[in-house]
Image (tube, rainbow, N blue to C red; front, side, top):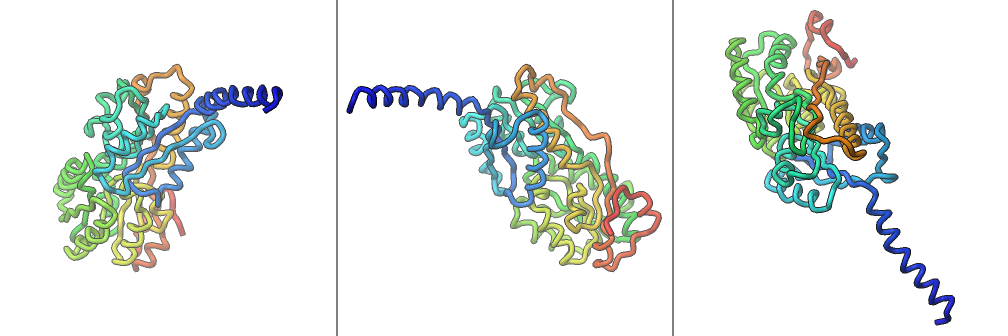
Length: 326
């Protein structure tokens, strides 16, 4: 090897650590969700939008590591540990189960969660204003907090229904609270209810079928990351069994579901992305950032779904809707 080539070789070798360090400077955001990737595309778009708004673009100056439990609850601790050891600068916990798994896995890596259930009752944070530690996030109220109103609206849309079925994810940290709230609301309304449980994607068919077999004239789907991830499957089940169904987010109604009442989950994920971007910039402590909450809840109705069910939605109900899909 001549002297010039040898020196050039040394220069190239010396450049490697510089390149490696440059690559390492690109921050990594971890993402953990207790579902499959199917049905989550719009939420990821919203998450990336929130990151974009703070100056972080995936594939440009940001990398995102995705982990999906495929609805297998026991996989969450392992997946959480993988993201912590990757290492990630910030980790997003999508749903109660994912947030709790991450909280157990690390007390130092910043965590931003998105949940529909009360994060205090779920044990994610001790306070909404100052969550403390390494965690904060967004509570979009799709769980027990809205069930009474959802049940009331479902009764108004389908007057005279004898029994209403409630579908709950048994593995959810809020499962007991959701079941108790449904029973409490049913007693207040004098409404007969049936509760069925679905802990994974395969259980959805059997859980829905069980409620139909119990002669539920309408069904309420409780808020849960599992159900959000299987949106299309649940909408198709409601259509197959011709059962009027109330969902917890308008995304279900856009997908063909009959009714929904709740806050926008997509907006919640955009806020999560914004929080993650703020933490990436530094100077902010997640425990000092208040848990964000929605200020607006919307009632959505799909008239095409109503027609396929042979259901006439009362005019007095339609005038209360924020969104009506023809």
